[in-house]
Length: 497
Image (cartoon, rainbow, N blue to C red; front, side, top):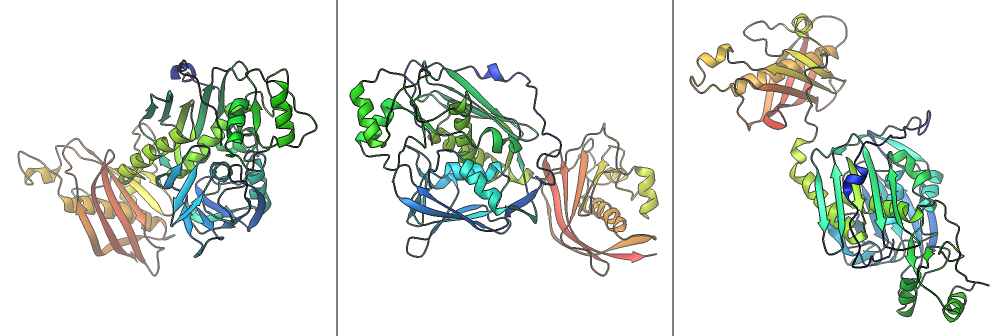
C-alpha cells in the first residue's frame, strides 16, 4: 500500500531511459541452492501472525497454510458465516483507493498486496490464507514480516510442474489521467523496474529494479509503505487510517509544518517527540535504502500482479505505478494469457542447434524407411516428452496424388509422424534390446491447420500416464510455428523383437 498523488504538472519519464542493456547481477553461488523454479511449491507447515489492519484498525490473526498443487492463492474469512473463500484474482478487485481489496461470496479482504508479494518473492505457488478480520495486518508496512513467516514454515517442493507463461510480445498499459505507463516485454525470467517522481524536493526522482526473484527477500521485502504528511493529516481527519502508526509507514514532509501540527501528531501517535529530519522525513524511521519508496512501489507491483493468477516470464517497466493501474495492467496481461493459452508449451525450433538424434540414429531405432520415414530429427527428449522435426518439401511422394495443384499433407500422415516420434520415446524408456511399437487406439483426433510444402512440422508427444506392461499412452500435437495443425490421444503397445 502506498499513497501519494503527483501534481498536474508532472512529466512522464521517458521509458527509453532505462531500456538500454543493464549489467545483471547473477545470483551468488549457492543462493537458493536446491530450489527448482520449474516446480510448484507450498509451505511445509501452517504458521500464524497477528497485527492491526492499517485502514480498519481491526486486530486480525492470519494463518498461512499449505495447499495442493494448482490451488494458487486464496483467502478465507474464518470470522464470517460459512467461512467464505476469496481467490486472489484481479477480476475480484473492488477497491484500490488505499490498497488492494478483493471481494467475493459476500466477503471482503483488504490490503492483500504485501503478503502476496512475499509469497511470489519466496517462490510459493499454493497457499491458503485464513484470517479472522477484514484486512491483512500491516505489521511494519513491508513484506518482511511475511517473508520471515514463510521461512519459519519452510518451503516444500511439490510433485507438479510450474507452468510459466512467457510473454512473447510487448503489452502496454497507459493511463493518461494519472500519467502512468506500464509495459511487459519478452524476457527469459520475471523481473521488474519501477520509476517514481512525485515532483517532491524530498523524494526527487527514484527508480528501483528486481533482476531476479531470489533478490526479493533482501532487496525489496524490507521496504515500507510511505505517504506525505499532508495526506496523513487528511486521512487522520477523516478517520481513514484507524490502525496507522508512525512505525508502519515512512512519512515524507515536503511542506512547512507548524508546531501545532507536530504537537497534534505527537499526541495521536503517543510519542515523546515528533520532528522533521533535515532530509524531509519524520523522525520515526531510518530509511533502509536510499530509494526505499521506489522499492516499495516495486513491491506493490509484484503483489498486485500476483492477481494475474499465472506465473509469468517477462520484463516489466512501471512508470509511476499505483494500485489502480497495477490491477488494470494485471487484467490486461491475464486477458492476453487466456487468449494465447493454446500456445503454452509450443516447442521452439532453432535449426542452428545440433539435434538430440539425427536421421542415422533414428533409422537404427525405428523400422521405417522411405517412403514411410517421417521423422527427420529429434530436438528435445526427456522421460516424459519428445519433440521431433519433419521438413515437408514439395518432392514428398504423397503430394503426387493428394490434392494435385494444391498440395496438402494428409492428416493421417501427421498422425503417423507423431506415432513414430512417440515410438522413439517409448523405445528409449524400455531399456536394453530391440523394440517395435504398434498402434492400439487413436482418440480425440482433430485437424486444425493445413500443412503444405515448405512447412517445418514440429512433432510433440507427451506421456499421459506412466508406461505399464508395455502400454504407452501419449498426447500428440503437431505445429507449424506456434499454430496447432493436428492433435490426438494415442495408445500403443511396445513389443520386444
